[in-house]
Image 1 (cartoon, helix red, strand yellow):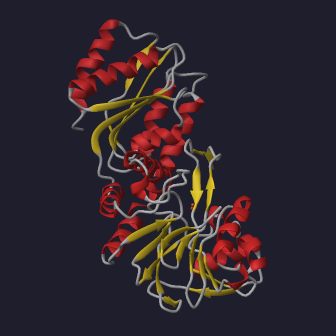
Image 2: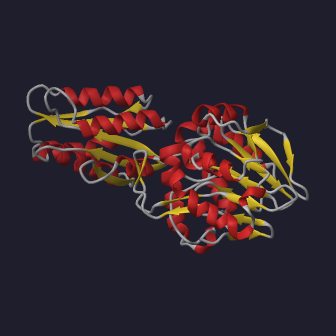
Image 3: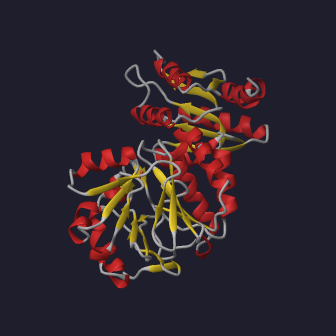
Length: 389
Ligand code: FEO
């Protein structure tokens, strides 16, 4: 439970959640961290807190450095409870502290906790002087709540980016160069696909602002701190925020008697024949939050369901609801499935893909079990004739 030094006088004092496996519906196989940062200057400053059940862990780390009663400022970059949840307990220790928040942040914190706390509200461009250091704030509304802001610390050139650039990844290592970068980037992508994806325009603005700064460290509120791979993470975010996709197909389906699955694999053959890489995602064995990782940069999204009781399967409906909410853009969709006598599911899937505003390839609708000729026809022609639509 010790703090981890980032620079002289600047420490990570957050919490490691080794056990969390479901973060409001997002499966976190590798756990999570809630990052809080302590700055020792003329004004002792804490940036963000942790989930309420991790308050003791945070306070122990802080207490290694300073008596928490001496904290002058608590910067709350984001109201969501994984970052503000320990604020009420902390304010009992640091009763003289001023809470620094955006205008919407102050509103949100008061609604959540109704604390009789001193607040100072920051707008974009406002600077908080800590002594030898200062933090300049930038409001980043809807990245990913209305209250979000980020802060740039000088002279150390650290960007405290809150949820942006984060990953759900529990580790005792705190820096990007201390873990295999492929794992860090995979979790960064999953985080982006499940949390940040709807807010590409806001990300674009934040990246433009970040690029105008000289950044030596990006300290997000989850996962590792970026030091070695700053230009990599900025360029990856730039690609994702513009919905720049790769020529990849994600084929997602559920199946009752394997007929829809047969169609799914015939579609895969069609993509493979065009040299387009594919991911097969059976909803019985893949969680929708993992499928979103694949979808983050995939051009083609094919979704299949058989018809059950005049409807698509509930697993497919769940995926499509989640997908629509995350608003991937510039995609090409395709509905497919087998049916016995009514066949509504395929039209329903297609309608859902339309409501995502995807361009559509022609749907594939097969009665009962697709025979060898249908499989060959799908494999030979589906993508070849339709991929440029
Ligand atoms: Fe990590 Fe939006 O909270």
